[in-house]
Picture 1 (cartoon, one colour):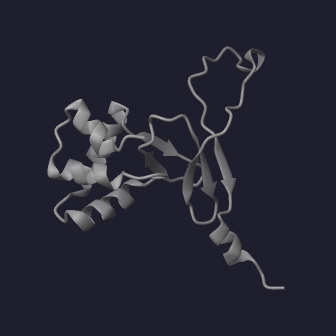
Picture 2: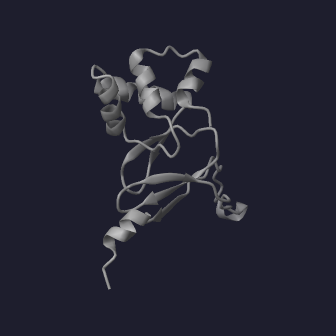
Length: 140
């Protein structure tokens, strides 16, 4: 997957210092950050970045199709830069850690669509990560 900052440069998007830092915060595998997490990480690199700039930039990137905006059962809105590969998510119900996973898409037979036009599929596997399982395990 091409990093977000590279995709934005290729589009000719004006990369101010604030936008560049926000895009760089969204780099890496399995990135699913809430806006406040993006703000905290961006501010650690560029202290003058404002919360409004982060929120406006995230909204603009979603509108451009460069980020996916997701709200999962844990209630947190998160942003995913992996827009190039079809994938689902694995969510730890205890700590909120989220990973991208690939799996066969479920099917919905025509007779179960009730006339709806199917636009997409979002699958979230809810589980406990190894660290949370260890933390809740009781010694024998």
